[in-house]
Length: 200
Image (cartoon, rainbow, N blue to C red; front, side):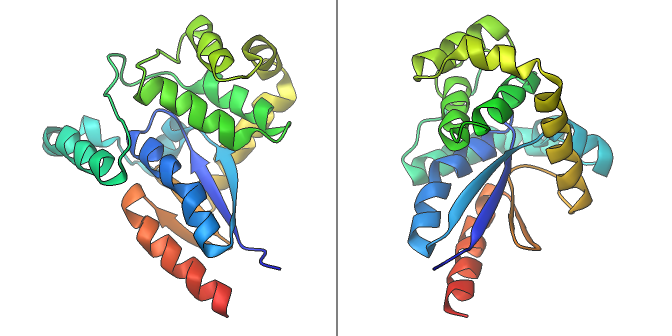
């Protein structure tokens, strides 16, 4: 029985994380792996490592929209740059931790990222966030309430601290055991490593 696990550290504020999220379950299925969705706070990772979002680097920002459009087209996935950017994703991430406790972490992650990167919902506003995830079949009000509980807040903090300790410096970040892969454009390397591991 294959026990390979892809730990997917994600924050809905990252467009490349949305792109990767649309592909990761199919990649896992092809390689016999499973996905463990790990919400974490990208801003805290940037602070800890001295990294910066591409949109804050002038030369990168000029190319960002074109690059995102190319990836979205390659994947056949929608991506509409939201009016509110950057966004405060803390409430969404805490709700993701609460959803994870019920086994719905992957479905929640895709729902909240689709709300932001496709539908343009300002997920930094609790009312809009609750409405968006409720429309996707979740009990948004219950998840928002759960997100205020200290154990949920502690889980998000622990995920973030763990990612930093293990070497993460951006999003999306993937781990297979001790091996780290960073970025949507490294999915091909991740898949190659999983295929090799499956044969070992």
